[in-house]
Length: 381
Ligand SMILES: [Zn+2]
Image (cartoon, rainbow, N blue to C red):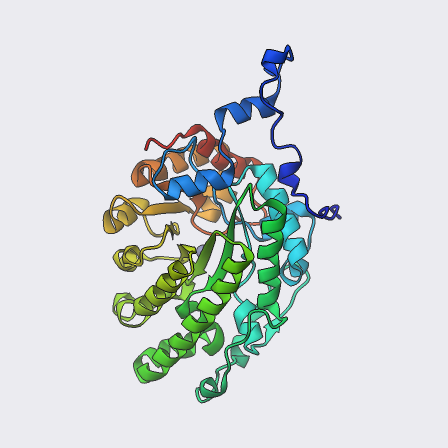
C-alpha cells in the first residue's frame, strides 16, 4: 500500500524545483533536471491552464488526460476505495499528476454519485467502479419523479465525498494544479435515474416527462457544481455521454437547452466548464460549440478537424486518441505522431489528452509520450 498523504502537503509540492539564482552563488545547477525544467517551463500547471484558456501565451501545451482506474492502480489503491473515500482519490490523483506531469487533478470517479444520493441502487466492487443497477432504476416508475427531492450535496452522501475531494485538493495543491470538479450532464443524469432504454422511449412517448426529468437533472447538477466551486475547483467537468446516443433532432430539442442552462449556471457561479461527451458526436458538434464551454473534449469517433470546423477557431479542443487502439495498444513513437496530428488539426487552441479515460493497463511510457509531446510543443499564440 502506498503511504498516506501528509496533512497540508501535496506530493507535487514537496520538491517542485530547486531554488533559482544558484548559478551566481557559485553552485552548478546545470546538472539539475528540476532546475532545467523550471527554466524551460516557468509556469505552474494552474497558471498554464488559466492563461491558455484566456488565450494568453503559455510556455507549453497543457496536458489533461482523464485518469481514474489508471490513477488508482498507479497509487496502489483499489478502485472501490478510490470511489468511496475522497482521501484515496486525492492521493491517487496527486501522485499520478506528479509522476506523469499532468496540469490538473480531477474529482471524477464514476457516474453514480448524484444517482446514489437520489436513492438509486448501485453495485459495488473491490477494484472496479460502482455500477448503477439499471433494472432497479430509481425512476422505473415515472410518477416517482414528482416525489423525488433534490438531495443536498452536503448531506453526507456520495456527493459530499466528492465535495470533500475538491476541498482537499484545494488545501493540498490548489496553488499548483488546476482542479476539476465533475457533474453528470442532464441527459446522462436522466439516463442514470430512469435507465437509458426507458429514456430513449420517453423522448417519443412522453416528452413532457423528459422535460421535467431534465429540469430535475439541471437543478441537481447546478447545486452539485456550486458546492464544488465553493470548495475550490477551477473547472467543472460535465459528463453527458448519453447525449451522443440521441441523434441531432433530439439533441437540439431536449438536450442542448438543458446543457445550456447548466453551462450558463456554472458560468454564473464563476466556474469554467469542460464538456465531455463520450462516443460519436459528429452530428452535434456545432451545438456543443454553441454552449460556450471553456473546453470541449472530442472522443476518437469525432475527428478533431470536424470539431474545429464546426466550433470555430477559438474553441479550446481536447483529445482525441482512441484510448485503447491508439494509446494503450500503441507505442510512444506512434502516439507522438497521432497527437501531433490532433494538434495540427486543432491548431493552437488545443489541450493534449486522449478521447476518453486512459485505460488502467496503459503502459506508462505510452502515457508519458503524450506528456512529452505537450512539453515539447509550445503553443504559438
Ligand atoms: Zn468519455
